[in-house]
Structure formats: C-alpha cells, structure tokens
Image (tube, rainbow, N blue to C red; front, side):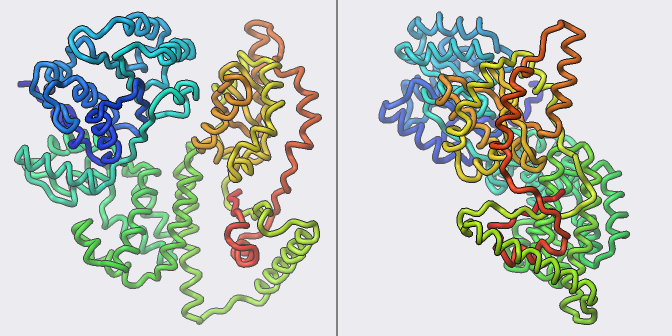
Length: 586
Ligand SMILES: [Zn+2]
C-alpha cells in the first residue's frame, strides 16, 4: 500500500475524536440526537482545527441509520461511502477552486431534488469566503428558501469576508486553536498506535510550531518521522521545525541580561544567518521568557512540561528578577507588532536586541546602587515632568475628565520609521470601480457608523476618513501610521465596519482597505496617470476633493502627537495611569 500521510489516516471519524473542540462537537451531537439540526451552518476558525472533519462527521451522523448518541457508526454502507467521498448526496466543494456563479447556480438547481441515497443532502463548501459576489448572491437565494432535507455547511478561515446576509442565515460555530497540550497528547497517542518511539519534548516542539493546527502538527510529525532513525528525538523535531536549541537561546538572553549589546548582536546574527526566521525567533524568545517566569514560580511543573532544562537556563532563571523578564516580554511583543508590516524584520530584531540589552541593564544599576543618575539627567526629567503637569492642568481646565479623556500620545523614539506596507493593489482594485455615489453614501453615514462601533474601535476610526469607495471595496485613510497598522490587523474592527455599513447602506458591505493619509495623494496620482495611459478614464475621486477638504477639519480633530523623550514615558504612565497613556513607537 502506498504511504498515506498521517493527517489522512488519522482524520477524526467521530465527534469525540475531534481534538480541542468539545463545546462544538457536543452541541452538534445534541442537535442530531434531538433532531433539531439547522439547514445551514458556518464553521469558522484557523486552518487545521477540525472544521471540515466535523462537517463530514456531521454528514455521516445525520444520515447513519445506526448512529448512537449522535455519533456515526462508521461501518454501515452510508458511513463508509461518505468517508470515501463517493456518496452522491454529500457534496464537498472547494470554493477556492470553484468560485464561479455557475457552480452555485448548479447547487441551486440540484438542491431542489430530494436526496437519492441518504436522508439528507449535505453540501460542504470549504473556504467559502473565496466565492465571488455573484456566487454569494446565488447562495443567499438558496439559503433564503432552503429546500427540504438539504443542509449547507460553510467552512472558512476568514469569516469577515462573508456577507452579513449569509452569516445571519447560518448557525455559527467558531473553532478555536488547539492547545499545545492537546496536540502533544494526540501526537503521543498516534505514535503509540503506530509503534514509533519518541521523546516527549520533541512533541512539544512540534506542537508549538503547529500554532494550534492539528493538520500542520501531523504534517510536521510526518516529516520528523521520515527524518529520524527509529526514534523521534528532540533534535529531529528542532531540525524539522527550525526551532532553536535552548543553548542558543540561553546565550542570546544571557547576553541581553548582562547588557552586552555587542555580544548579543553577534549571537543574533549567527542565529539569523543560520536561516532562522525573524518572526519565529521572536516567538521562541517570548516562550523562553515565559518559561523563565514559569520556572521561577513552579520549577517542577516546567521541567515536566518542557523536559530537559539546561543548566544555563536554570542559572538565568534563578538570578534574573521577574521584573526584568516582564520588561523583556514587553519589548518583544512590541517588536512582534512592529514586524507584521515590514520586509525588514531583521532590522527590528537588531533594534529590539539593543533595547533588551539596555532596558535590562538599567534596573541592575539601580539595584546595585553603585551609580546614581547624573544631575543633568535629573534636571531634564524634572523639566519634562513639569511640562506634562502643565498640560494635564490645561486638559482638566478644558473640562476633560479622566474618564473620557483621549489617550495621551507619547512618542517613544526608535530608529525606525515609515515601515507600513500600503496595499497598493487593493487600493487600485477599489479605485478601478470607485464611484462618487458609493463614497457619498459612506460619508453620509460615517458618523452613525462610528456611533455603532465600540469605544476603542471608534477611537481608532476617529482620525480616519473614507476616501474612495466601489461596489466591493472601501479605502479608509488614517491620520497616523501606527493607527493604520493596527486597523489593518484588527479583523474584528473590519468585520464591524463591514457589518454595520451593510445595515446603514442597504446591503452595502465592502471590504475595507486601510492606508495612511500621507500615502493617499500619491496613490491617487499614480492611479490616475496609470489609468490615463491605458484607457483615458477620468479620476473617479476627483469630484470628491471638495467634500474631502470641507470635512477634513471635522474628521481630523485628534490631538497632535507630542514629541517626548524616551525617559518620560514611564513618568507619563505614573502621572496619567497606564490606561491613559498610549506609547507610540515612532
Ligand atoms: Zn453508519
């Protein structure tokens, strides 16, 4: 028999086998037991978390004549045929490849006919967010008048791309990332079944690398097995996943802790030149720091979990104050945020390394009390605090109470700037079909829209304005790059804009494209000149200029960013409280 990938062989065949989604599988089982199934389900969640497996199990359980407690028997002809994908009444569609309107029309026509072999016809549409607008409309028509004995299961990793009109007609289940422990347990179970020896720690390395997806975990395990001789070892798993050994991490972190910038940068360089990916390295560093904290609290528990702890690690954990580790975690997670939008992740890592080494050096000096802060530095700090105090008094005078005050923006100077990647193609795509009417529609309801958003979402959108709109897309320009960056990654906020707009403007649910105000004139200009060359069409946004300018003063009320020195950040936090101070890396 040809070799079959583990994830195929070990695909869950019963609800109880689906790892880490107990609440969902229990609900589905109950629905089947009580015969209270819905005609449309939406399964959302990261890849490899069991969405399509659960969909297939559901198709079996609802059609199996011998189902017990809502589980399929997996032995009868119906169950076997569904498992093997040859039952005509269970239709699996991959929207990533079948995204045409025709295919969905086909579903509409065929769905009308009663199932031939089973009790229920089940359509499983994977990656449903890939459907075109036309196909969504066709699907919507089917969901509006669901045929008898037909069930739709829509699966997606990107629910925010699905029109609200569809979502509202489905019963939604959010599959969550599977915990590392659950993955490790499952991998261990499989390895025992197939009689392969393993180091427990190797499974943790694989589990962490899989980032909550069982399919990825099984693929990595597959590779590791073929890589190792007889036994799956920690070293094998490290090699395959590209994880770092504890030794290399020890070296890097201890250089940072001792404030040896030069040495830390050297280790970093050798790590990166060995092919380590910056993002993965950051993640490993964060896990390492977390392990240090854990070791300080419960050494035995950690040893159990991770396995071999190096002597260096133990030494480091014993002699580094938890406070320092918290500082390091803060720097690392800030950096993690920063590198999401850049091609130059390595530079950010270098900056982070300098920050790590510097930041952890300071408390050491203070605690040793061998050096005191130079008088001139104290004078500067006093001046800065005085300045902030004046501003606070002014703010209070102007009637801003602490509760409703906008966050005070403090700029923390770093050596990087303008690193946000503007999604030019997406902007062009919107501009290609942009109309003045679409934009005016959005502008007319913009204030209402803001009212519908949560406080933080509103704060984010306050310094932004819609600058172009097409039937499917909306370009929003943000005053500040940092806010734009956050908006880009805030799927929840984008979904809220999408959904609320569809309520305010008759079913208009465009995808949001975030750009900076600074980049807008350039983007617009280059689009126009490109368009002139090819077709000669005018600028769809041209007529809206006056509107933009008129409203600018309304939409850009936000306080200007205040340039304040690094050292003042902590004082500012002390004065205004953590919640009121928003540190911006500029
Ligand atoms: Zn059966």
